[in-house]
Structure formats: C-alpha cells, structure tokens
Length: 316
Ligand SMILES: Nc1nc2c(ncn2[C@@H]2O[C@H](COP(=O)(O)OP(=O)(O)O)[C@@H](O)[C@H]2O)c(=O)[nH]1
Ligand SMILES: [Mg+2]
Image (cartoon, rainbow, N blue to C red):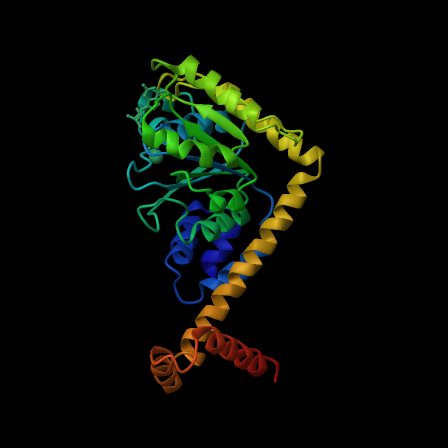
C-alpha cells in the first residue's frame, strides 16, 4: 500500500515495482489494477510494429528524444526479444545524452513475447494501464509484427505505426499486406538502402489501389533512424493523426470499442477458467469422452449441454 502511495506521488522506483507486480501476476495484482484504473485514460498510446530488424527500437529511441524535447513524459514498452531495447540514444549513447535534460521522464520496460510469432505479450495491456495511471503523457509500445492482422496492437493503441524496409524479399512481401492494413502511419526505414524510392512508390500505389474511403490518408514517411533522418516528419504525422482522431470524435469511439473488446476477452477468460475447474473437471468428462469416442453421442450436443448447464448454474 505504501508503494501505491509512492506511485501516486510520481516515484519511478515505485512505478517499476508496480509494473513487475502486475507483469508477474503476483497475488492481488487484480486489486491493484482495479485501484489504478480510475487514474488511467490520460495517456496517448502509440504502437510501433513491423518485422524484426527493420529498426523499430532505433526509431522509438529517436522519437522518444523528440517527446523529451517537448517536455512530454513517456513510457516505453518494448516487446521484442530478438533485439532487446538497449536504450540506445536515451540510455547509452553519450553524444545524444548531452542533448537530453537530466530529468527525462522516460520509463523503459522490456518484456518477453508470448511466443515466437510475435504480437503482444500477455501483460502488455496491464503494463500500459499502469504507465497510463502513473500519469505518463505518451506510451510507445514496440512489438514485432509478422503480418497476420495484428489486432492485438491495434486494440491497445490510439495510433498504429507500421515500419517496413526497402527489401523485396519474399518474407517481407508476405508480411507487408497484413501489416499495411493496420497502419495509421507507414514508415519506410533504412531509406539509405538501395531501392527505397521504388519501394515507397510501390507502397503508395498499393495504398491508392485500396481506395481509401476514410478521411484519414495513411502517410508514408521515409526515415533513416540510424542516421537521425525523418523522425521529425514522423513526429509531425503522429501529432496530425492524434488531432484527426480528436477532431472527428474517433479517439473516444475507438477507445469505447477497445473497452468492449477487453470486456469480452476478460469474460471469455473467466468462462474458460470456470469451465476448466468446474464443468469439465468432473468424472462425467471421462464418461462422456468414452461415449463420444464410441459415437453414441456427438461433441456438439455435449458442448451445448455443458453450456446450458453452466448458464443455469449461473442464474440460480
Ligand atoms: N542502414 C540502416 N540501418 C539501420 C537504420 N535504422 C536502424 N538500423 C539498424 O538496423 C538494425 C536493427 O535495428 P533495431 O532498431 O534493433 O530493429 P528492430 O528489431 O526493428 O527493433 C540495427 O543494427 C540498427 O542499427 C537505418 O535507417 N539505416
Ligand atoms: Mg527492437
């Protein structure tokens, strides 16, 4: 409890402790989330996704420096075991450190992925909530995107940035389509590489072919994170997208849709947990398995019966 008091005073050590507590799902972490929830909602959340190695961490680093310049506080959640967020300019690079004020208000947290397929780690949403309720102005969430439609990240962010590189490898091609669908902003990083212009032209005609009906035009931003190029343009597009959402009441609408998605998945999890302990963990399961195996009954009917039984338990 005293840790929560310190947390609310803005103590970053307490913040780190609360994040670990929640990330590890320690006893009572749900109560902590319940207490913090009313304090959240003030942070603007930006997702940065794309294939491994495209320069997401480097870019996050550059963007972070710009937020610091604007005196904005920042939480960074990096979910990418293949290239752990080393802090780069913010934490290690002495040259750049000189440009940053002493109290930078930046908090970085690296997390392991759930699986090799990338996506969001289990506790990302909760860690974001903690940073949000701590009072951070912005939260950057770096995740590996491998091209299935990454609804997880979309559902956890206000703005989604997809980072690609000018490579015509088959694997990148395959990832591209799925990733492009979720992008509010497309970044072509490593534009120092050969073929960058052609790649950007190709992306832009793909976007046009898609026949955008929404009033937001997905911009393509050319960057060289390593060489400090293009991050200001990206920063401006981030601000423009936030402004677009706000002035069209879309931020509120999107966040409400996210709340509904969250509610559904929380409920799903509760039902699943309930099922595995109560309904299915019974001797009747073995009996019914036998009956299904022998084709005396079908699994569809059995599942329906279980479900109805569950409902009647719940309502009585
Ligand atoms: N040539 C070039 N290399 C870059 C650029 N940005 C990042 N890199 C390098 O690409 C590698 C992967 O970067 P990283 O930020 O870890 O990528 P991530 O896996 O997407 O987070 C690192 O060696 C970077 O130095 C760039 O604009 N041009
Ligand atoms: Mg990375």
